[in-house]
Image 1 (cartoon, rainbow, N blue to C red):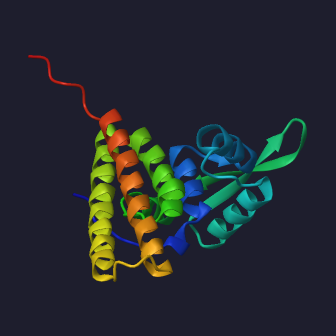
Image 2: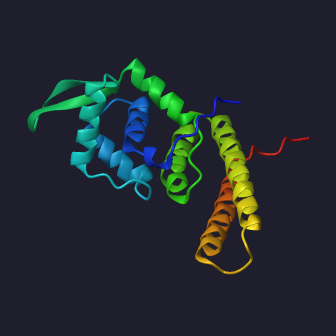
Image 3: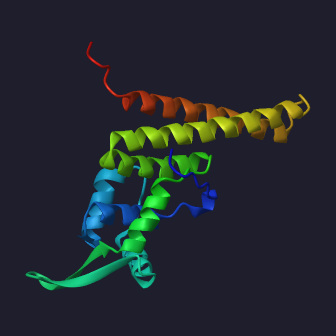
Length: 188
């Protein structure tokens, strides 16, 4: 089992997704945007200037480096590649558990699964299992808090009921994805 690190939902950032795309292969900012739109367009909506701002921040922190490449049609373009600290940050993020809320699961976990499937089906299954266990534990906590509330329909009870039902929907979605990634039955 991989090391589990749980972060806050506010930590959902495009930095790790860009690191992941560069983990797959070096690229120009425009190529990164094209791949994001093509492969993760329903997950991330990043304008080109945000991609370049993120790349500049990553380069300033030593996670990526760039080199100028001549262009036949205009000024030279910067090609970005991952440095070892960037690889390490990507791997830590890839093997972490996503915060148990719908936005983080929809954006970050879906992105992590995209990269995991690209690396290996076994890794994707492991990440799904770990995330599923985290969601089950969180759902149990929510259900215990709901059981401790008075049965009257108060805003607190209604909000907690919504969170419990949201976790149930996320668990159903995750189990469906888990079934899709199940290894084929052994021939006997």
